[in-house]
Amino acid sequence: MSEPAQPSYPFPIPAKLLFNRREIVSLTGLSLRFVDSLIARGVIRAKRVGDRVLIPRHELLRLAEITEGTDNTR
Image (cartoon, rainbow, N blue to C red; front, top):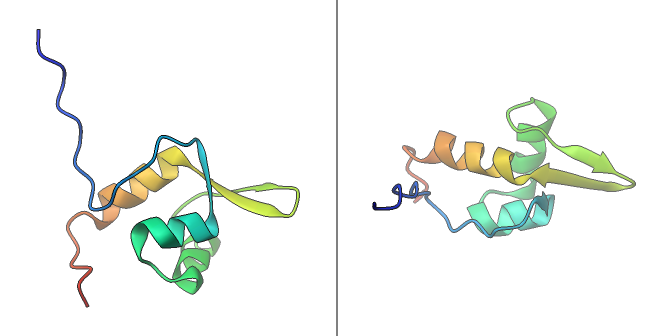
């Protein structure tokens, strides 16, 4: 039996469970301001742990699926 095909994402996604906002910026190429906007609007869900804002891996995967068809070369 062959293994199921892994989905392809527009950026590499490490196998971590939680990412801080700056890691999301580094992985996606989005600005910190835009990532904060996505969190504030509820487009991606984040958890506050102490004074840190952390984004679960499944939210990063969902963001990758949302942005897959967009042109990020501007």
